[in-house]
Image 1 (cartoon, one colour):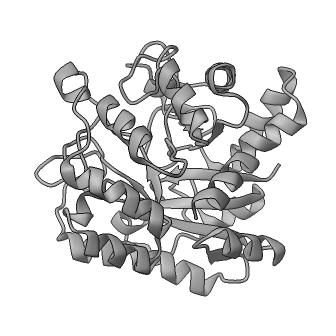
Image 2: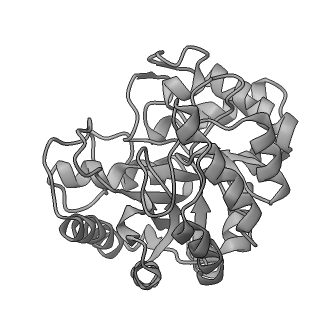
Length: 324
């Protein structure tokens, strides 16, 4: 089964592990070598912005943003150059289709946390020229775009900043996918109001099944679907389970979320956003080569092959075409 994954943090893992490419990373959940064996069509590779002044599970070191971004870009570019026979960068639907026709996988570059834009539309264009084609507007802290998801209802209801509101139509015009995963509820509805194009939640599930603020409500799923967007099923245990402290990521829970999203948003509204190399726990699909298990399990529940194709790659393809 061919598939497109809308989010992973593998570039960060390669950087902290001192790797020059992402071709063969046995200690990671994903690499290009296993993507090929799993029949991947495309992977969205995030440049996750390490939060300033906050500890993370990813690294205890601090790096200047420019050095860090350039380092991850270099790892991506090294991979595309050295393994150009099997994977190539994609910048729009045309280049994605050209790679597909040539039997190559596609790599899309993204920002997780738009902090690097620093409230400057010229920087937005600069990073577009570098190849960035998706921006998760926030991570878990406020930035120039707006407020993050939060258990604090005051924060959760805050929307986009003035710059964030100005940036949305500019991202539409440039051809940058707007990603609301990690964004506050208020920010979500601001994006829905302001965006002329579809937008996505690259790696978020249904809040009715897992009450984590990172997930989407029923109404949000309906709004997202009406705008022509998708949400990518996240494999993180606490975004799947009814117990948000859970360490267990089960395919059966993924299927429950998928079915609910289809119920509220239709079968065109759900995609894959694994969050590989950004999640921990006991994962039933713990690496990219195990991805077929999800599609096989969906088929066993009676979901049609046509619908599984949409979930696996066709919905993501449509988003790429409509936005890029």
